[in-house]
Image (tube, rainbow, N blue to C red; front, side):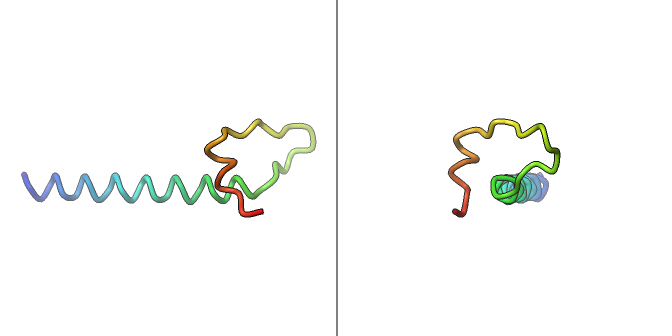
Length: 50
């Protein structure tokens, strides 16, 4: 049971890290559609690099 708990925690950390990296990339990318750019949440705006 201990091993299963450790694996679950590692997977949760990996998923959270991937989600943050994905949000960071999306914060610095414009929408490819000409007429639609959704409003970004404030937390995502903080990840901008410019």
